[in-house]
Image 1 (cartoon, rainbow, N blue to C red):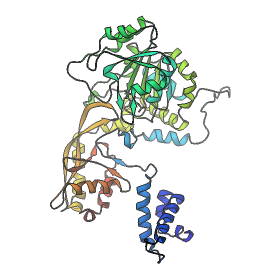
Image 2: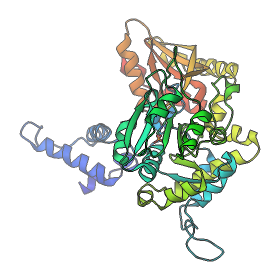
Image 3: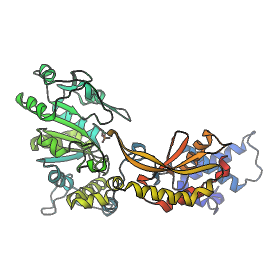
Image 4: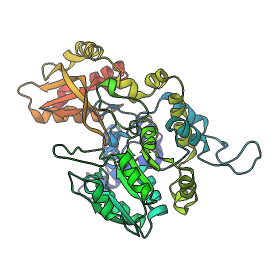
Length: 456
Ligand SMILES: *Cc1c(COP(=O)(O)O)cnc(C)c1O
């Protein structure tokens, strides 16, 4: 085994997976060989062994957070880590890798606030009195409900009882936070009088949730934030709004629907607004809480806050992203990948698609026909459901005698590449949406790396 681990042919495996996992995989394959049905103790073919160990490792583990090309047509893909961070954020994380003034006031040397690095920027950007952050928005909601509504009631419109992918279900989260959900109104229509009827002596607050990953259309009514805030305040209750995505800029110029910004929701009277760091904001995973100073102070003092707090690397990344928004508007548009990708002109995508097709088309012939097709890019991660922006995709269609199964095989081969290229199979074609592609030369290389005849 020792000799094997020092063999040059094993080195790439160790480079990718680390020595310990490679040693386990090789050990298992050798042990299997030694069983009566395993082929005995004849000399091992190292090349063969390396290949089998590579397959075994890939089946057992996901390579540790390898960068991939997300060409799925979903810009914020939860399974691919949502928002891509700007280089400024990556640099900030690196800069924060050693000791930093995380919880120390440099003036006095005394303990300072961990969130102060981002809180000031969040307040300035949203107009809030105060701000704090936790692990994600699910955590923010858990914390807010636990602090203000434990053993009490919280009315929520039936049209807003959301489930988000990955088992985030509002009613279950509310239960774990220790509060009782009071369902108000109906799925499609909720009126002020429905809330009025629900509010009683044990009501803690009113919660409004942005239905971020679905739309209710047709005969619908929801109570606007301002009206709901007035209703809550008349009874001495705070209004908490879970905004979900929480964009800080206007995205309508990209043909996307107008979304209420945290600043507007606060101006409409919400006492606390919650939103995610890694959706439309384009930052790291985080749950942002902005609003009234007294409420934020109480949240920061809740013991659960300690369990849900954010580490220095993500705080550094968030501060860097917020800084980009705090500079000239065009700076965020040019540096935050999501905003940059939304702004790429359609004709540029088409031109780049044609150039790629010219480069790789022959490599896939005669097995697959490569074409440039129009596509629709969606935002994803429960932001702006149903909203899409026009795009172009490089598409691969199987040519006879190849069939649909071979398209799946091509998609899988690209997913196994270095780096993995993640596309989407749709209408019998493999489509690589180019809107999120920021390195066409790398994509071309990945495509030319595919052993096409091995797929057929
Ligand atoms: C996405 C979303 C959440 C969960 O946010 P995370 O940051 O992923 O925890 C909560 N509420 C709404 C309305 C959302 O859209």
